Image 1 (cartoon, rainbow, N blue to C red):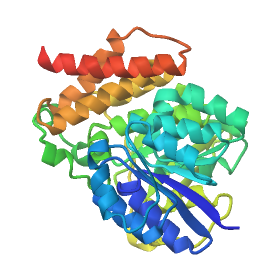
Image 2 (tube, rainbow, N blue to C red):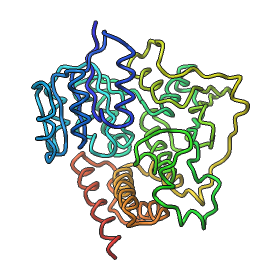
Image 3 (spheres, rainbow, N blue to C red):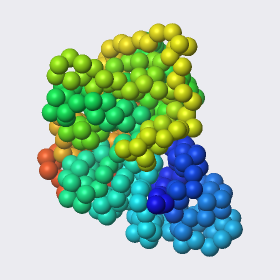
Length: 383
């Protein structure tokens, strides 16, 4: 039977890769809905080629441009609720959630409420509301499969044994462009430098998160929820070659790893076709050309985000929400040269320490905490 796919975040790096995977999978896969944030021309081009039933664009200022560029007349949604409304408007089997940041939470929650398979690239959803998403998925029968290369690797490696026999997991990290820089030099990092990732091609926000290693901090929290782990079962290991995508250690001492080229199309496709595997457009890994693989401990003094990630995973409650919100705003301010590179982690820690913690928040309380954290970071820049 033809699989119907809803793609949230179609114009970003993950979204474009997902479309490449779907093209390669062939005619049994149909894109029924596309959504983007503000890139109306790119969205129109995708829609004109694929002819989905509906499209959505969050930025209302560009919806007229989108309608002008569309060569046909799909259902069209815009505004802050556009993505969630799109989820309700079409019949689909799989939702790919590739929206960066908290903006994808509402639509992801709705797809889980509907009991769908959710291929999740948006780690922020799990960081903010893992305590709500995971129990909700159990109630509705939804399946959440990770698209992050690291969490996909963990998911795959865990199938080598029983979940109860997992001792710990290792999330690999390239270390970003500054893994060998000293602390003083890191205070002078420019935006252009932070956007030069040595191995992965990603959007600007995720690239900067990789440079601060905030992405690993968020992945620690995500892994805690996705795999029902204790925070002390989650380690980060520096692996600059980005060939080993993560590892699982079992109680008998066996360590199972997933290896592959640094290409997001592999975990995207696995989330779509699981439990089956098919030929993938990613290049095959040539073991003979690799040479050697290296592994190192991360330096939490130079990359304090890692320490904060473990703290947030241990604390739970509203911590993940304010941590993520503070980082999102701080990254945007850094991109505008309003904050220094080191300020990103410092502001995230300040917001964590200052916020009123709620141990078992409702969704409304999480959204309130998110809004509060964003306002506080903006205030700090003015002080």
